[in-house]
Length: 393
Ligand SMILES: [Zn+2]
Image (cartoon, rainbow, N blue to C red):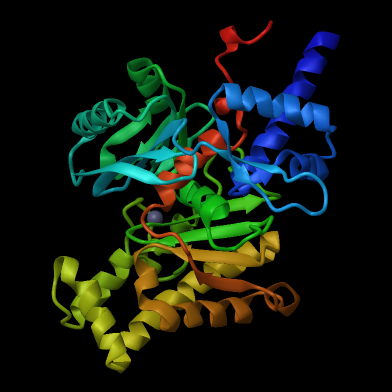
């Protein structure tokens, strides 16, 4: 028992030190000891191990503050890799991500209307290619998938657009590639991406990331951790009813869901009724109309923002979170859309809760899901340990 405890302390100390290497471009042993309150000897031992494993290297001399000139150390960014996947409804993207979250070998495949088996084959094609790159070793695969996902079981419960229901995706990928797999809902992955790599530094402890694109969903970070709820579907706000009478039918089978009034698809449909083109160009034409000062365009975008804001007000009222970050196709409408959201939030929740609310667009764009899925693999640093069998038992 005692031995296990000592081992645990060792791992905790190591994680403390590793975290500092992730947070700093470079750092000295003395600085690590100062921040972590570990002894100089403990720090030196841990750093020696990290150098042995190739995770950390000495990179030069720091500036002296009177005593000995300190040696600076840095994370070796290409010593380990992750694979990040974003399985969007119409496009799969996958990439190799190094320890400094730099993306390489980005692959995109069209995935519109493929059907269940073909969607899986497309995913294999992408992963076969990514696992064959010279970027080694790969520590694991992080997947952001649309729809309902149970992360604990690694299961896609229901992703209508991909034709998947009750699919044990994590197990399938683990067996095929022999790598650990983390599966997250795409909005939750995006929230992790924004939380870990976004521009708000230091990252706020609590944050809600709302994706308003083809669908709508939120990822909720509470106390620095992703909050997934009892069934893993926390943040599924897109199918909460927003229009109680006379709402439009939704793809989920219900009527009047938030998605039917505030998603990019809903807005595109309404814009088409205004005669603004068809298909993929509609949202661009709407944006151009908005910039020209067209009142119909402004009314349409503001209405979508208002509904979005009411949904966000409920989240703010429930959780008292002040940092709200918006992502997805709707963010193209910029301030007019954001202002409609802010006004609706201010009008629909207690002033005490909303007066400090900071509602803005995300700093990450399309990469958020990829990065977040990969980051959730690395977030407890256990992936960066030596393989079990090579460590003292
Ligand atoms: Zn719905």
